[in-house]
Length: 110
Image (cartoon, rainbow, N blue to C red; front, side, top):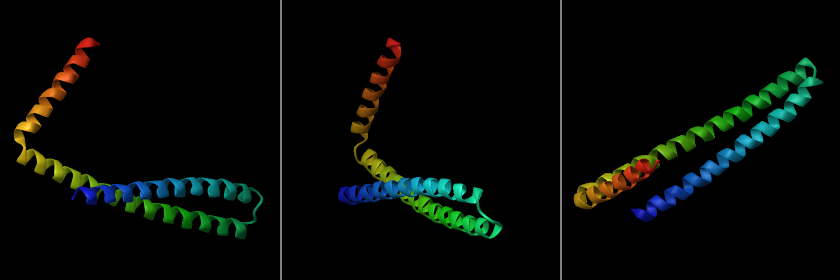
């Protein structure tokens, strides 16, 4: 199951990188199209607007896919955490106590 999570994490990271790249491309395309619009006729403006709408649609679809994949990954991580806590309650309690002590010490020193 751990290798499945690693593979899923890699897929989410790849998807996130693709979405970021798409958004950067969309911004660059929009900037260049806006420059074209300044000197365009009404027919050219309509064509430019259609291209921008297409690019926005593509970016929206990829963002939605990334959101779904990230949600799935979070659900799987929560499930794994729940299973670990159910199987190892004393270890989980110990880790929580140590984390509480560390956070308390850090807050006290402020």
